[in-house]
Amino acid sequence: MPDDTQSLGRCPNCDERITTPWLLVEYEKDDGTEGIWAECPMCEDVVAPE
Image 1 (tube, rainbow, N blue to C red):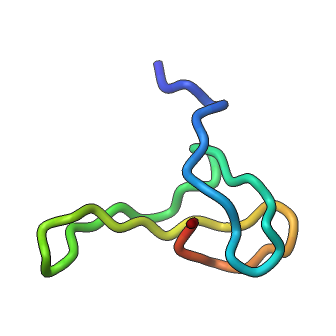
Image 2 (image 1 turned 45 degrees about the vertical axis):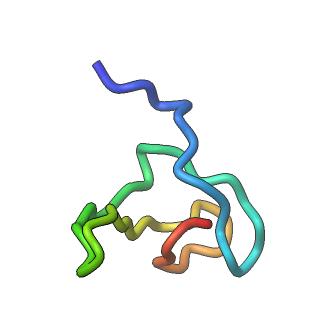
């Protein structure tokens, strides 16, 4: 079972902590690293957590 408290990073717009339930998309970047898009629970924007 996933840990719902695992942090994905912070919203680049409002600095809110984003956790795994807010994850929308995981993908592989051209350089082979993993990228993610998530919804910020505070500002409700779709962002790449930092």
